[in-house]
Structure formats: structure tokens, C-alpha cells
Length: 355
Image 1 (cartoon, rainbow, N blue to C red):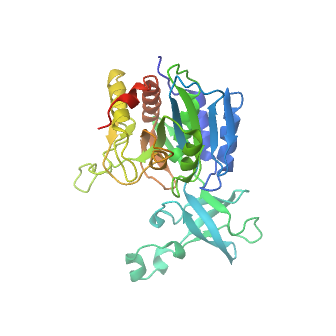
Image 2: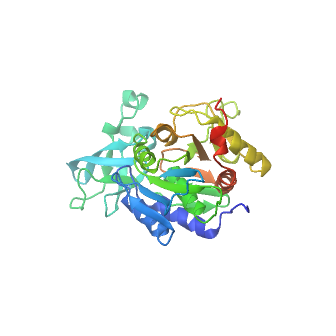
Image 3: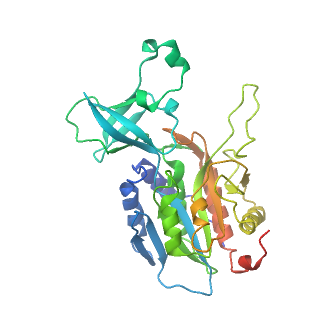
């Protein structure tokens, strides 16, 4: 098959997805974009009880394996927990955010996207002990400046960052995992006569891989592929060397094929397949191993009687901060590797002994 490329319409879609607000448990804005993109597709489309969007074939063909593609719609963010007066709100983190990265960051609060800023004491008002200690969420406030805004405790807030394309670079919040959502939608443009595809645009990944677990139980696939964004571990050390001894991923080196992570031993037959097609098609890829963390593959592979599962992720820097950095070339290589691998999948894989 002719492998796909990233076109301007795909870039426009990713921009719309990344700029949308979708903190875990409040993914409605992203869900509306996905549902709009699914209109007219020859698929059964539904929203499940947790809020994930599930798209499955109109009719199951038992002669072809059913492959589940998953990407999560949610992003890390904040929940207001108390109104402290004068436009100040205490908040809790939703997902794994380092509080050290937060002071001075602009946010959008509630359904009306009220602009605010995360405030902390200025350095000249802190004590030596405070400067030496770990920054706590309790010491921070979301400040919307004035009273009377239409927000209240329980509302979510997201980083206010807007996507920018700068040469080969993508700067945006929520690349994790709106880039996966964009990849799934692009796969719908392609034909795979050897398989059937089911799509899971899942919720609540950032707080425990929850939506994908329910989706996998419902879809009951023969294989599953979790498409995500993975941290690049490639910052220079003080001595000038590049740190890369943990996740083994860098931006610019193509998609990361997971071998194992904190929640999954990826199916070695699928790992071998995607490595082989990468080499055959001359698609640059890298192996993401070892390391902690994980993707929705951690819950999908345990569904029903077990699902042969692999994760393929686009590398990025600055995970779970106000702005992430990815490469257009890595995005396109990920799309091409996924398409090439899907075109080679069959029931024969399950007949191979698992090491």
C-alpha cells in the first residue's frame, strides 16, 4: 500500500484537538470534535457510559482479525476545590503534574474558559527554608483576578497554551495524547482488506487507564494497539552528554515501539512485526525500553481473556507541562509505521508461539 503523509488538513485537525480543553473526566469538548469527524463514516459509533467514543465495523467479518486502535482524549489539568475569595481558588492536580512547573502559567477555567494565572509567592517574599523546600500545590492558587466569574469549586482548568508549528516542530499542550487521536482519525482514511478496525477514543487515561479498560471489554478485539505520546529522555547533562539510559527515546528518531513499561509486557510477536515493517519500509523507529510509566495498553491487554497488545508512541519533550515539543517528522513516521504494520496483520500472528 502507499503509505500516508501528513497533510495540511491533518495539521489543522491536530491544532483544533490540542487547543480544546479535555481534563480527565471532562473530555466533552474533545469528544464533540471526534464525533464530528466520525459523521458519515461507515461505522457503528457510540459513546459509552464513561464517555469514551467507540467506533466499530457495521458487520463483523470473522474471517479477518478485529484490531482495536486506542488513543486517549483526556489531558492533565486542574480541579478547583475551594473559593478563597478575591478571585483566588485552591486547586488539586488532575494527573501527574510537577508543581515546580506551575507558577506563572496561564490557565483557562470552567466551561466559559475564564482566563487566569497560577500564582505563587514572589521569590523575595519567601524564606530560605521555603526556597530550599519542595513546592507544594497547597502553596499555589489559581487567580482569575476578580469576583463574580461564572466558576465554582469542581470546575476544571487547563493550560492556556495554543498550538504553534515552527518549521519541523510542534509546540502545544495536550500533544499527549491528541496526536494519537489525530492518528486514529487518519487511519480511517485508509483501507486494510486484511483486517477490520475498531476505534477507541478513550477517557480518563491520565488518572488510571480507566476508559480503555471498559472499551476493550466492549470491543473484544483480537489485537490491540495503543497510540500515545511518550517522554523523550534526551536532555543534555551538565557534562554535555545526552541522558538516554532510561526510556531510550529521543525526539527526531521516529515512533517509539514499546517493549515493556510499568504496566505492560508488549506482545513480542507484534514488536517483531512492527520492527520488521519499519526496516522493510525504511521508516525510522526506536525501541522504548525499559522504564516506568505506561499507556492504555496496560489495561487493554488484560481485558476479557487477554488481548495481544502493543503500544506505539510519538516522542515529545516536557511531558505534562504547559507546552510540549514534538516533531512533524516523528508524527508522520508514526502514521506510516502504523499503516504499514496494520497492512501485514493476520490471524497467523496468533498461531506463532509466544516467547
